[in-house]
Structures are given as structure tokens and as C-alpha cells.
Amino acid sequence: MFGGTGRKLDIMSRHARQQPSAKFNTGKQLKIFRADFEAHLQAAQLRYVDYRLDIRDLPKSYLANSVKPRDILEEHFFRSPQIDSLIEADEMTALFILKQLFHRSLVHHMEYMSLEQAEQLAGRFADFFPSDASYFTNCEWDTTSGNIGWSNPITASLLDAGVACVGGGRMGYFWIEEDD
Image 1 (cartoon, rainbow, N blue to C red):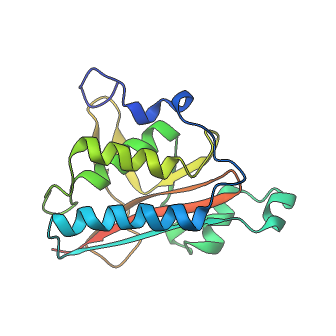
Image 2 (image 1 turned 180 degrees about the vertical axis):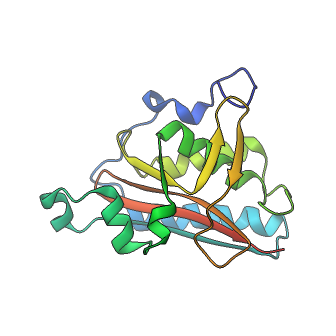
């Protein structure tokens, strides 16, 4: 149960989603995902939001050598000391954080999209990865209340928050930055 709503979020039920197949076109699906998210941001007329979204296939050498997820993220997306600010999270928590990031702004709490739309978009992000993927965030969370704390910024912005993921031969992240 999340956020005191008394119901389990649909995106958290992995048995309802299929694992990404080898035929899954990461580039094409990412373009569609990005276009949908940008349409929501434009509709909300947000001026102070900068976000980063990247999902890509892992180099085959990583798969053969069993490189650790944190090492992959450090090599491709984050640098020291940024990587040290990331906390490992389970899938349910990571998707809850994504839903909150898609739903409203960090600084002014303006709504980007409805909770239902944000939940669908978070589920679509998760569809890029298998259920045993490793998730990381710089957010702190309270699963009892559903509150998320935006802490440990890893950019030069006033506030930033996001989720990074490695699994199923893919790596990716969604990060949002805001200034007042």
C-alpha cells in the first residue's frame, strides 16, 4: 500500500507486464516516451524545468564480464562524487518516485500531469527493464506516508531528483532539475 490511498499502484504489479524482449526497439520506444513526456511539460507551460532522459543498450562486453550496476552508471551517466549520492532502491520505491517526479514540480509543486498519467508514464519507463533490474535514486522516501524528500543534489541546480536503472542488457535514467 502506498501514500495512504489504500490501494496498490497498478504499475507496481510486475506480473501484469511482460519482460522486454530481444526485439524491443529501445531507440524507437525512447523517442515515443520522450515525446509523450515533453507534450505533458508543454501543456503545463513549465519554464524552469530541465530534465534528462536516456535509455540505451549495454555494450556486450559488460554482459560477458558481469559488471556491477553502480559501476555501469558511473562510467556512463554519473561521476564521482555524484555516484556516491545514489541510494539503491527496490523497484516499487523507484517507480513510486518516478510517478511523483512525473506528477509535479520539485520547487513550486505545480502539476505536470495527473497522478494517473504519471503512473502510466512511470510504468512505461519500467517496461524498458526486467523485474530484477537494479534501481538507484538520490531521493529519500517514507513508504508509510508516501512522502519523498529531494536530497543529495547531484547537479548544480537548486533541486534535482531522479531514478537510474540497470538491467536486462539496458541502462537508463530520468533526472529532473529545477531552479527557483
